[in-house]
Amino acid sequence: MATHNETGKQGEELAAQFLTGKGIKILNRNWRIGHYELDLVAREGDTIVITEVKTRTSLYGGEPEVSVTRMKQKTLIRAANAYVMHYGINLPVRFDIISVVIRGEQHFIHHIRDAFYPMM
Image 1 (cartoon, rainbow, N blue to C red):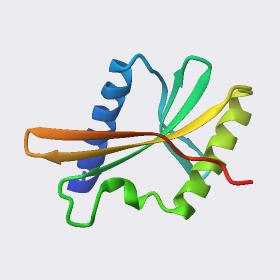
Image 2: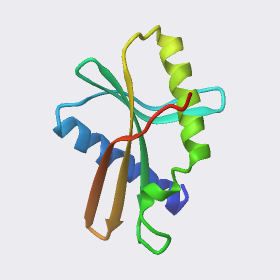
Image 3: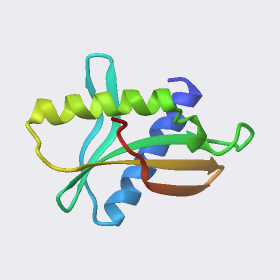
Image 4: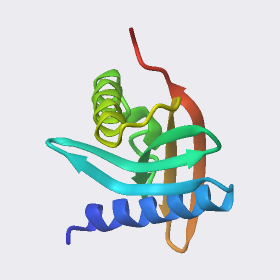
């Protein structure tokens, strides 16, 4: 597996542990349908939490969350719509971003709740 794939997988594991530690239940990891993918799908109370995880080993290109562009947000919204339709879910959906920076044995997590909202 390529180094960047291993880094991404490690970041997703750290993000899942972080959410679980906050009492948020992970429902799915790397959920796919067609060409859509959701990194983490969780439930907090009566809210479905779609979490995009961005992991980096340096801040050379800026904070990891800046890579969740408007186009990426639209794709995540479409994927979330597919998810709730697939499972027949009728709950509010929230979009979060978890930014993970891994430096050697240390890691830093930045959780952005309600990072963006579906556009009408």
